[in-house]
Image (cartoon, rainbow, N blue to C red; front, top):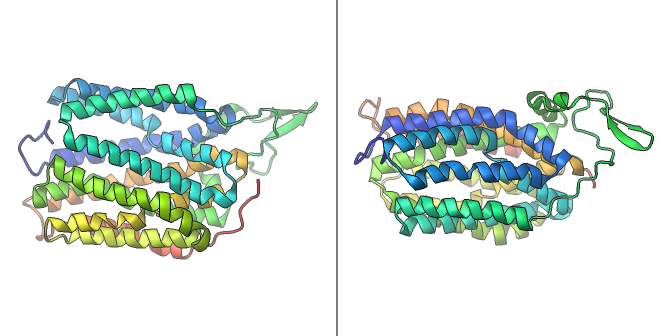
Length: 400
């Protein structure tokens, strides 16, 4: 907004550009995530992680150099192209990496701890942005991105990939895709066929009823998350004139609450309640969180609503853990990639549905005076995922 609509509290162009960016990134990741997940099963997590860790430095470096309107559009193009390939790849492969090294009985807690570490990083980054200028924020973030790529190359040990193992892929279509000849595993399916990500995605969803139900929950949950991400800050700026510091304070509250919950509460609740119940609890409070945002009547209400993250952060680790336990150990990358592909469909649909709605109800042409109407509609999408989670039946996991 500073580049496109300086000094204004409402900017429809920024809302539509954000929605277009989310939709294009969703199209790219829908195709790329199952492919990258499958490749990580074959060639190792570290090898596939190297590409996104390096490419994600480029758009940050552009804004670190300049934030004028021209450089914003250069950043915008690079951000879309790079994120079409890499968006969601780092957390997806990190989850697969954890699944490689943690037994099923402790996996939900481990996924929660991993998400908690991500939340703590979010809090640290937001604190930095709270006290640094915009120029310094992008310079620091570029440096940290470079540091992360270098650290990964030096210190991260790759998951053990034994190419002589007899791998049985999720998608077999009734025919064995790997044959053992002279004591060695030989693929009788061309690599290009293995990389048909959309076919893999469809077949993966049909592989079990639990995975199908979990995919529906993941879709509607991410539909709400993407819609909220693309609308909330524009809504709060138009409604209460929030600026960078207000947003930082809000995110710090949400991030700290989520970090505490994932690092300390989830390892306690997951073994006792189970992932399915914890998932429903998280989605229920996700709905409440959005409905409170939509009817916010004072500036303190969004800060109070942000505290609900202590409960709704359970949902994403629980979905990933449920899916992880339904597949073989050597298929974790493909499983997480396919679920990320489902989430990418939400990245396509959500901006088409909610960005025009947000722009309309924040403008002077709104049919009726309800600035948070789009946020309430987003909350309904979250409620659908909650209802579906109540019908989720988790079958016993596949043993390593």
